[in-house]
Image 1 (cartoon, one colour):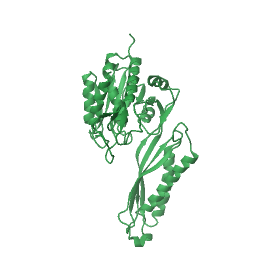
Image 2 (cartoon, helix red, strand yellow):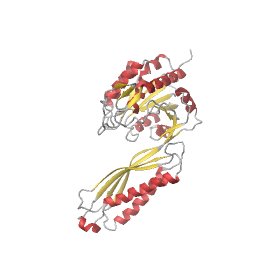
Image 3 (cartoon, rainbow, N blue to C red):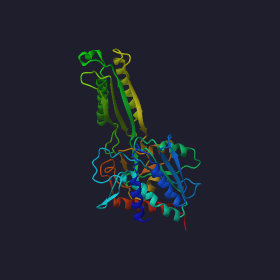
Image 4 (tube, rainbow, N blue to C red):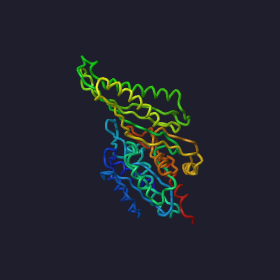
Length: 387
């Protein structure tokens, strides 16, 4: 593979605005065309509205389980961020390539595609499957359609490597996540008669305080997993909206929170404890007005990844990456779904760092692309037919 091909592809991928709020079809059609130019068939698995799609393709034998290389095509927004470079134009400065998605995770996808000619030329004994998804950034939404497609296949991938940015370390575990939106419906009245109303903001504040106390409890009493930088489950409130005027007792408030759990913690148990407290507040509110309510809607849910060190995949990928230390990450991936729903052993290993992801002037180091290129070449060599 020529390094220039990877950069050419990355430049094109970056030019597509695939923020989760936008369609990714133009990018997917580009990838389909690229694969077709190399005599590789691919299939798009659409969302219900046909505005977004996953892509799946197999290179090599069609009748064997193989290695799945997985990545998401969507990116986070640039709105409100202070970029000094055009986020949708690849900019090369001091051995760094700047642009939205360079690290998370179009750099990996560009490298995979740049290696396609070599995959074809080497005549693989074991196939390589390409699995590119949509809407990962908003809760691993799109990949679920891809998983439904794979469930129907007679032959599924044997293992999965997700190319999220890990600085080419081989990650075997990450936390799971539950996110929820809470809507508090109170009773409005003039603020001079506040005791006759039900202040939705006050009740939301009590719920947020309960979540904060849960976060403190997790920090102080665990359970703990010392392999993480933050070795316990975290609880975080991210948005709050409510009220119209100071002289009106607010009848509505909403907020969003998340739980990111280690493997030894059941997030549903924590959510159920929260819901029990919610019900106690509903009972209290309805003493004043039966119209009052609190609604808890789960908006995102995906499992953590916890691949056993004894899996052959782990030592195999560490050899490819030439990185042998145990590693994990504090952000989520689609790996838990592949592992738990499809029972496909999964690790995360890709170029770049999430320290640069989601930020203005996102970039990937040229050295990271070089490291991943060597990784891909070792992968292809390990899967090709013997001479």
